[in-house]
Image (tube, rainbow, N blue to C red):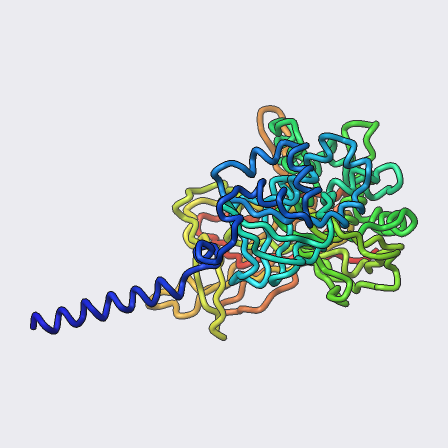
Length: 491
């Protein structure tokens, strides 16, 4: 038995040794490659390499020589002397711009050309993220010679400088005077599309991140100021943009308490531009024929409307478009409200509300809400409908009646329930009186799992709408709701 244990131990040691050897990286193996630069810091190694000596001078000029002489590990993508001639003199003659430019070539940590990932985003000291593709491409530059190791890191020689690019949001900010759509996007720093946006504006700090936290577009669509992720934005020229806004205007009627603010115009523009940003950088060759926004709006990408070449930015791509023509049938998306997501209740106790996980007869899972034994008359469940248009809606619901059976009642009894749309409370004397813009009613049949049309309503003002699911005026009248759908009608 002792001999057997010793053999197992020897086998284990052998396996561990093999594993350690096989997991070694180029950085670990650098000590035996005979490179004299291993005895000097990155700053010294770059300065002593004739091909990139001018970049070494820029390190000294900006103070990054001291950073690259420190004990931390860095990766530097050093442009050749010849390629530095491409750099705009305005950058070289501006101390702040030059420092940002140099920082855009330096990353904390060691990034060898031999990597497991085919592609990864690397954060540079400029706070920009550059994509390292394969073993030879960094951003839009090619690595001429790779993996020059030094005592505190590695540097690669690249064939062109890594110029600091604007991100999408910075580009939009820079074009407010020449682009109506850009001007509107930036204006959402002042105007709040939703109530939560106003609170964010009050609490957001100053500085370059302020827009990310408070601009209504960046909060509710995509944060185009985020350097970590990649996006595509379709930025329309003025004529195409104005035409799309005009198309949406009849459906975004919005009154304002401030006579100086045209809320209809602001909302018409928002519901035009919110569907034009996407969470991926689509290069021209991979641009899909059809895209669907995060709000469910689908449209065909007409590549003949693209003006010039795509604008490559630090966190994605902008396509300048003559127009993005999206039909109203696609623009006006259906609003669906889930029964289990009520925002409150009235005329009863919370304990009477049941949230269920169920399967329909086809085995499909669904969630719903029921109030089976309310114990009070006219039990109510409250809901909020968000982003309704100012138009007529056809209203549907699915409500499951599969409860209320007993030993003598084998089939659940039919019941009716009501949907109050647009709640209004008025005070008559000392009494609060509740009324609705419209009240729709439906009969809930036993074991019926199909969606049912319950009527229509015309919404006069776009935006939020209170919804109230109301039981009949008896203490035993139940409620049930899987979901309701509001389908807009084209005028």
